[in-house]
Image 1 (cartoon, helix red, strand yellow):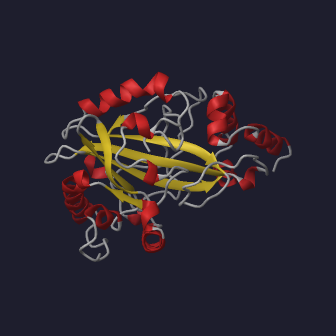
Image 2: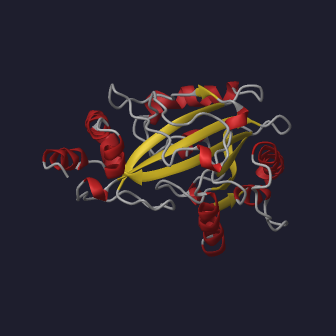
Length: 297
């Protein structure tokens, strides 16, 4: 969730995104969050202007159709809720509708009422949506995650932040305390966003399964996946909403766009600890990409 998909929270450089937009205003792939210093484990949070809370691009209709298919065929895989998350999900739905009415008037499709409010909200936007509610700890109480990056929602519902991230190397030692403290300090008046990235062997958005054990192939066989994540606290229920907007493109296309991409990617992967490389399915991948560069593939 917060770190499960990529494990590192880089200090990022953002290219191509200028703020609230209509569909035609965003570049096809607006983010390139590679740190020139290599891999690092950091939260990388930035203040969020709520006018840019949710992003819509030319894939809006296509991705909402994919969500509809997943909700029909794999509902229990992409949706999980507890009763404790119902009120916050209703508040979230109202906020999503209000945002679209304000910044993207007329774009939202009609949705059938009567579904769980987090499902209704998810049908309106490209983002995956998660609601966390504070009891003894911050716990995931409602989520519609159609585009997971190799994690299983059903095993996370009702669990704490530490439980959610328990598979992530170095999380307990480095990020558990600051993550929990950040959630406790978050207020409705200040929201945040961040970027995560990973390299996968498939461009498919819906990937609830683990990494490939034996990587192979050249640059054309790998895909750069970026998650733009936002965190905000709802003013009425005081629940925290975590959104995940996923962008995927081929590593080869990014190399054509920016000649520094592959060297920076290789440096980031090679500088990651071996436990992280294993967890992410990166073992041996940097050398494959280095070989591809030398062959000018």
